[in-house]
Image (cartoon, rainbow, N blue to C red; front, side, top):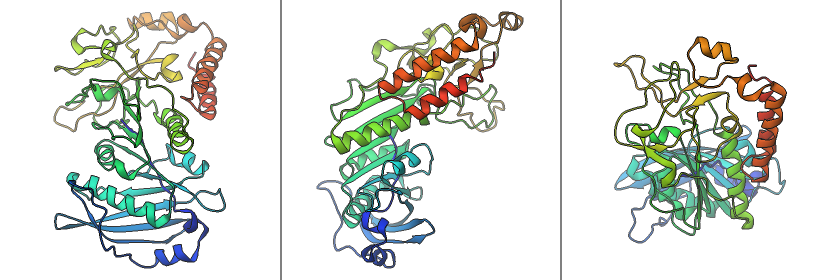
Length: 395
């Protein structure tokens, strides 16, 4: 699965050159599209940019199978280097998970709205529009970030990118494009559960399973408390690794994804009898093995699941069976003390029973977070944030 992308305007445009300003005030008609042999292709009819406050507004029109599609976007510029960005991050959904880091690292970030394109049109449109952006803006590197169906489209357009950060994708880019794929716990519990790849990641890719994290945190029509653990700390570290991999050839950390032995038939998982925990969805599926608390064992375990204060799952339950489905996961906190958990017949050790004191909890959190920093799976600022949150643990 892959990652994410944001994009700022290219070097000269960032500097406000005459060439960029001219490009921003007129449409650019292309003589030919960037078609790949034997592949569906989109004809790029127009491409333009114009000033929009501190950013640049981008507009493109593409034609595929006789139908024209409009693609709008926003280009953000990094403060440094003053000579202008040489690399661009393209994302299909606005997000602050990775964008500020990309700008800090000197990349421009372009957010493209491809929501109006049909599923069939997204990959060829992205490939041809992105291919034009690389040439027109004179970008040395192009990175991409997307999730779900957009991630699949980016994978299909991978020839236009140097690297991709993809979340919850069902297909992977072919070499030489480098990619980092991620997915979370909800991927195994939805109506159409994830099916694992038969082989390990190829040399041009890495796979990371974000243990105990659910993609959606929407509380719509959900019975149990929502699993709101953020994926952003992992995505930031993995984006930094992808940036260094594509810019300097520095290999990223090794994959951390479930192997066959890490999965089990869902009906064989031994869930603790946790008060308020919904029953797992039924149906034939394989899911990651769990520990005595119900937390997943395999994958990338961020500090708040390596040293948990709750059970985190990728499933919940609908409050109203006639209402919309609940897409979130569940978080059931541990009791603070032994007497508290015994009152609720909770079999999981309480916080005081497992950690003793808050001081020990904070110190252990620091050890776990710093280890992930050394492994390049967590940025220092995010490690510090986990430790700061541990000081407010509910015991």
